Length: 524
Image (cartoon, rainbow, N blue to C red; front, side):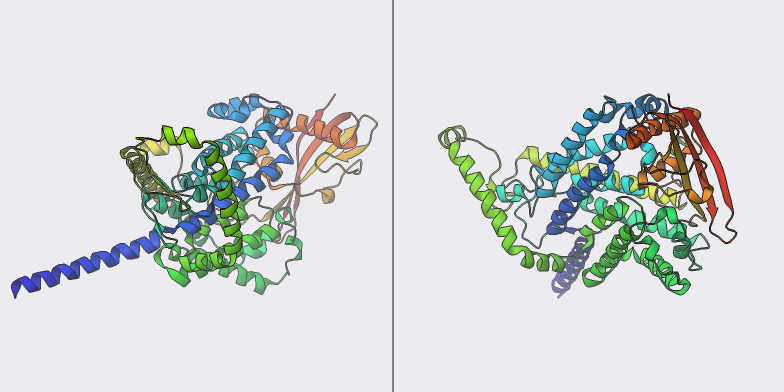
């Protein structure tokens, strides 16, 4: 009888452990198809980011622009290792853009996925380091997602690698379509996203405008932030208060992205993604909205991907057939030589069309363990950094001496949104005495009144000018020199001088207008 009770207790404990493992795996693991969709979205976002940046390639990433390499070396000495800092010529930057674009395409289609992700990460880090003064929170989140994704089997499904039998991460054995990738790397990717929402929620709740339901209304009073549809938002305090509380509620509920599973998790991820995509239409915030929506893809549970696969099955089969025919053709060309060279080969056997490894060599197991260790270290570091940023724990003196964790990129419109509409007057005078807007290129009045001030052509121009008010004289002069060339390109005439002024309009009620001259430069 005693033995039977002990066996019963043991079975019960084993059942509890199995339940807890399954619960943890369902919440901290990621469906491999979600990783595939995440990979595709990352590749597309990288391409969109490059396309948007390419509009101002000369202005922001060459010596002929507003931030030449000489200033980069003074401001950020370590940034000199950036590949974009090797030359100040536009053609070099353009060539690197092209390589980055090819790597992004390879990532999106899943061709040599891990190499494509690594190349994309190096080029993205180099691009961001070349001009830190035009970056926003979306840029920070993008490289973090790409870095965390590099540690995951992004090519295990819906990829060229998967069809050719190369998609699995080292050590991964024949997963079914419903398998989840679990472990430190998966937890790291999910935590990167959760840290953004939790940090932003805590900071917003510490202010007054968000709990009072006034924040979104204030944001849409800022015309310099208006996106394509920003000016069409109804001026209804009640409606905008609902939007404020709705967004705040989603931020507060964001921990359910990990705590919950199934339809609750899918609903929260879907609502957050829809909110971010709506911001892309109403606010001028660059790629932030697209990056944020991409970050939510790994949270969608298996039933979403079951439905997606059923809808996409014909296209997937055509891709598999096309790549399979290409692989068979290439294998036929290498036929005799391959059959001789493979005799006695002890490499891992690849399972066709599964993207998985059938037999794992010790070297691959070692590599897999190394990836897990790196991911675990990064995960612990991220949790510690977030805790320090939220004030849960004090930053150790060595950390505080280098950086302040509380100054994170996750305080968007928090604790209070700006109450000042910031516009710019950038006026160029040609050699013939005509006046043009140095940012937009159209004719303007000789003596431009503050009411003629405008927003910014892009979110990156806005970021550049917002930081220029506290910049040193060299950066201001470099900006004016760059605008001299920009204005000459617009007008087709030599530019005699450029004057830039910032205009601040109080939107909190007083309507006060303040004009500050940033600088004037003779262009000849």
